[in-house]
Amino acid sequence: MIQLFHCISARSFRPLWLLEELGLPYELHMLPFPPRVHRKDFLALNPLGTIPLLVDGHTRMSESAAMCQYLAARHSPGQLDVAVNDDAYGDYLNYLHFGEATLTFPQTLVLRYTHFEPEGRKQPQVAQDYTKWFLARLKTLNARLADMPYLCGDRFTAADVSVGYALLLAQHLGLSAQFPDHVAAYWARLQERPAYQRAQAVQWKQAKEQGAPEVAAPDIRP
Image (cartoon, rainbow, N blue to C red; front, top):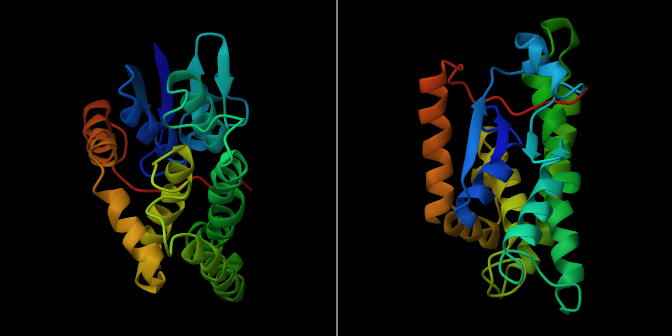
């Protein structure tokens, strides 16, 4: 059975959401954030000490966007992935990684320099600059969504999960009120998906049952 190691609302929410979309059986391990500090035993499983960690037989993965690509290709060919001979394949890969590399990265700096650094090391100007960077990158997304419901046309794919997590993180940071119109409508559509709602419910339920702190704390990689 697939095993996913997860902290509430961390990047590991991407594969959790996709597992729910796929209807696959999985075992969810809830950890306190950051696990490399609070669960030293986790380092034996993932020497990086970062979340997520996905274990599927001999496969071990630590990158959330890569997990989305892997799960979609392996368990839903032609459905939540896009075939290599499809005209939309390039767009699919681009937005799958856009969600992490372009949209999530600047937000981790905002989190770090507003929440996780001690008082003497907080950098309000850095946080402001990277907030502007993130919001500026939404212009590309807004234009893409002007005449289509999802990033690959009329079809929901793993790319939407990747980008959707970045919008969830922005919501945690209080930035969703600044989403441009098409992005805001897209984010509302994503939140209406039953699998998204199940993923939200299961992370809170399992956190309580496993005794993990019920605190939303996206992973920061120094």
